[in-house]
Amino acid sequence: MNATQREILEVDVLYVGAGPANLASAYRLAQRVTEADSGEAPLIAIIEKSADIGQHILSGAVLDPRAMVELIPDFAAAPPFQTPVCSDQLLFLTERGKFRAPFLPPVLRNHGKYVVSLNEVVRWLADKVSELGVQIFPGFAGAEMLYDGDRVIGVRTGDKGIDREGNRKPNFEAGIDIHAKVTVLGEGARGSLCKKLFAEKNMHGRQPQVYAAGVKEIWEIPEGRLPRGAVIHTMGWPNRRDEFGGGFVYQLTATRVVVGHVLGLDYRDPFADPHYKLQQLKRHPAIAPILEGGQMDKYGAATIPEGGFYSMPQLVGDGVVVVGDSASFLNGMRLKGIHLGMKSGMMAAEAVWEALQSGDSSAARLSRYQELFENSWAWEELRSSRNFHQAFQGGLWSGLVHSGLQMVTKGRGLKDPWLAPAGHEHMKTVEEFYGREYSPPTGDGAAAVVGGIERPQRSFDGELSLDKNTCVYHADTGHEEDQPCHLRILDPAVCTDRCTREYGNPCQHFCPANVYEWTPGAAPGEQEFQVNFSNCVHCKTCDIMDPYQVIDWVTPEGGGGPNFAGM
Image (cartoon, rainbow, N blue to C red; front, side):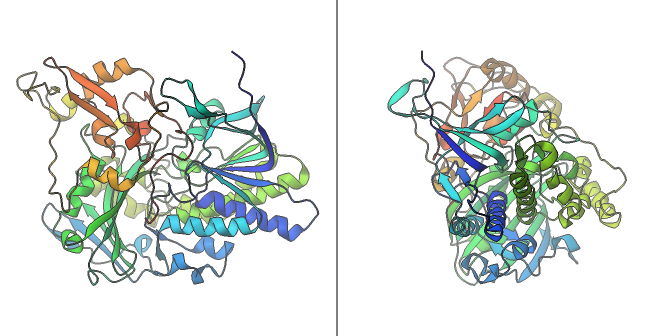
């Protein structure tokens, strides 16, 4: 069979992903080009896997404007920034009760910050970038890194028009090879290209990255429940004492509120369910009165790189730099990363500009990015929270004590570095956690083994708490059904045999979109397994938390996925 003929597009700088980090970087780089006014301008391009800019960006968020002030000083007059934070609360929840923290730690004080819809922010930024001559190509997913020896020379976009069996359909369109002097990877958490690059080039950080899964909903509620700009954070229930995470409520407009829950993906319970944690939170007496009488409009999920400073990968290689969440620019102690991601992109842009000017895009030249980082406020901020997430391995209360010590000691605490394994290694088998072996459900619902534990049954009231399929409908996911599954099971026998016996197939619980479905088989003790990839909301929890690491998330056909517009 003849090799596929591919179009080659030559650019000077290629950005993969149109998130805040890459958009800020492209804007700063375009500014440098404009300021230099030295003849023919370099060609700067951005590819984005979603069909429209912002479509895969999940947020309400609280934005620290520090980087935005540096990049676009008059940003506050723009529509996405019309909701300054007006109040802060920190609530500790029990199953039915609450008490308000008597004082807020400095890291959770949000005066001077903004409640924003992040996809509105990136659409606004994308317009600004386009005005400076940067070319943006939505609907093109980066599928492979291109190399010349050890040097990155660009990215191949994914083929379109391939059926589920891997055959070409009549509308087949070969992916494009985009060659660049410098490639900037800003794919977000657990980017598929970054995952391969870090493994192939040994660019991993000092210790493994640890993630959290954030599940969010946008609700339309009656006016007057909360003032616009109100921020509430919660700790405690519905998390177990040995689980990291908490909830939040952000009031975006007079009638639009963001409610969400974050669960650290280093939990022990194989039946832990990030989606259900949020549904439980919404029914709590502290949260339910805010939502009652309202209606859920949007649903989504995303993973968050919580590992911090010691989990940061090598930031540069020959012909490539890494920015934003892909490079672990997130402060878990402050629950914020947008400003850090933007700052990383801005620093990377300075290094890329110098590389273009010199005609040298080697790792040695691009290491100017690392130098700028080490002399920036971003370095100081991330260093000051460098052991935060790891300190919660012993549970909530010991974690709070240790985090208090870290604030006093500027991030050191009692251990420095505080080493931690990858999150999935914390998960216990069903027998280890529950003291009984797992019994897959049979055709009549009876336990296969007397005394065994079956998968938990979740309850939903259909008003405040909604099942996964209902929620996925509100994620507005759209994938071409007749295409290869982008959730590759590297060893299916591990899933259907070993994982069933040992972990009770945790994918059906940790996936917030009901992608992995196990149903009773025809014979007692048998199960039927299917992957509903069209449900996928692109959070990548499965790639991260699978205990055997046999699920490989790759990009689907460009343009497919959730539609978080309006979040």
